[in-house]
Length: 291
Image (cartoon, rainbow, N blue to C red):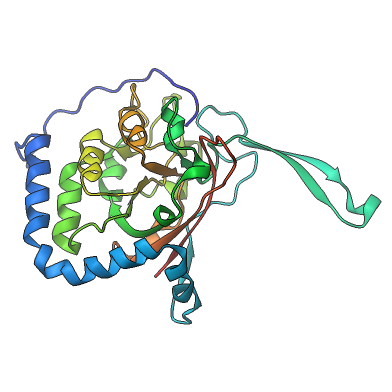
């Protein structure tokens, strides 16, 4: 996302079956549930922590294993790829032509927050960590995928809520330290359609995280959150609550992920190819998963 906007949607009334539990209570419930499973998952958590702590050195043998499957979570993009403000995110200009010189190259003008890209802490802070200064060990992440595609079909501005995290933990165990927690909403399939960005009447509409969910994840030493949409916040957000709370805490986000539906909810490792330009607030990234 690039430019603030003013767009609000009416708060949905409680639905049948909703649990009357406050966000703070639900967060405490999730944390208590995770603690109760700690003994069961201690061995797996220790192994994951060792892999994350050893960073890229430990990642190399995993990539060399013939049995490992690599999934590209990155969209290929050009000037037609949807952007938050509608301005093309990458411009091409011939710098050297093959017909003239026997080789060729482009001069590229790239806006940082376009395509599959990273939001660094500096994006929403005056003096936070730049994309070049992200710790390398935080770029090799256990990947946890929360599927919200069912509710996104009914609500274009659906969000990951604390209860979605509770359900994931109940099914798959603790969220490992240093994880990338991403959601699959089905929005990646809409990239070639105006629906990826807008409703027919031109209002922003796409799923995101709720602040209550990311406040919970912030207590679990999660390194990053990821979305298959244009923004960490839902399209109808008017205050960028997730950006304004998650990024200043020294964590990063990844927007416009692809192919999350090709991976299991747990068990994959994400390798985040972050750009390294000094003072960068983010930038296009190549994100791969090995499972």
